Image 1 (cartoon, rainbow, N blue to C red):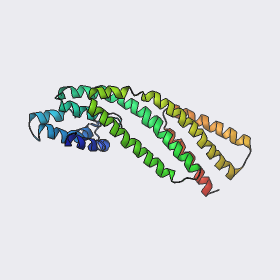
Image 2: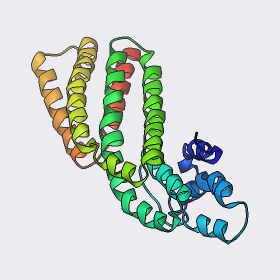
Image 3: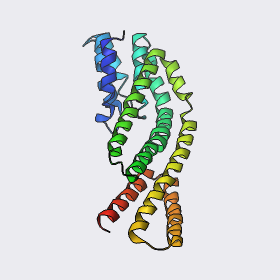
Image 4: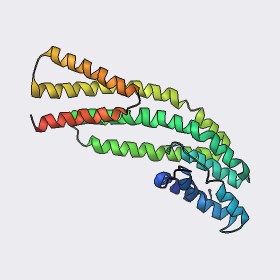
Length: 243
């Protein structure tokens, strides 16, 4: 069974981003999350307790869904008496984890879930807006539980295993699937506009082709595709409400 401090550490890690600073970024949230475990291991006072707290005030900035792996590893290292190596470990993995997490969760999985939900909305299933929220909450909590357990059970080997998950390759596959769904969604957008505004087939074909190129350029430069998904949905609803 895990220590009570470890369980509190996990639940506090869900609020990791509730406190930020310009100097330490997520360090405030990390320090607060680690507090119960450090109190349990070193007591409320004393030089060892102060020294343990100092290990978590350095700059930390990584993806919030994968950050629990780092905290779980830090907890295991504290329990094993490896506190002196924690700062170097955190500094080594926060950048790679941030890049992997951004590419997989923000750049691939979130747009995929959003496009799927919006496509279902266009088919008349309005409750899919709630489905999107529930799915994303499931991804959020499930990922944090998985990565925390991985970091705590395996320590630094768990952090290495995170990098072996090939999330970059998986994100490319998800983006391909999201692109196919986006084409399906765009078809519903065009059908909705055509039914309201009419006009010829060539007009709508040219419009879709032009819109595709206009969307492609900013997306390639890092603009979140979700903005275009929301814009298309609002356009459809606007046309339906005010034909």
